[in-house]
Length: 169
Image 1 (cartoon, rainbow, N blue to C red):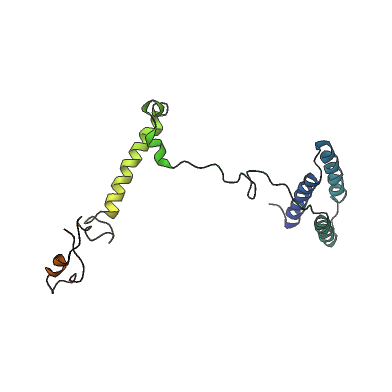
Image 2: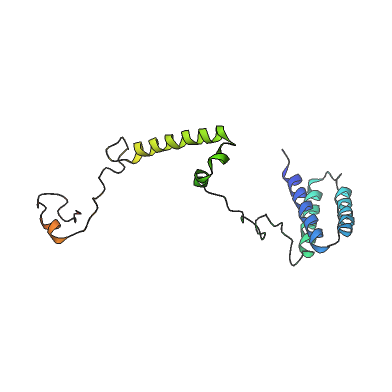
């Protein structure tokens, strides 16, 4: 496990490298500047005094702030990049529309998939079907299809707890 000081130094070095990459566009110049940057970090690698270490990190953070670039480069697929989360993940049901010849290329996968679909349907009917052992979900029957009329609401007994509800037929 790295100490907090080591984590801070590594973070500072990586951010400084990204800053150098932002300021220079030619690869050879970037490599040269990164070599000089590494030499600065290596010159202070043998410091053992904790107070001096803190002071060096603080000075490095200040220098990084003073030399910051107005527009840091971002990798295209990283958060903030132009292509971040642009690849659409296909929903699972798309695989149901594969041609049988395509499915034959992966027989074990599609056999397991069909088995899991059957298990899911059984689970769903157990949990959410009326009258099943569903823990109180969907205890009422769905209304029958049809029109709502005034006569259908008046025919209901007044003793019924659902007297104010409209009925379908």
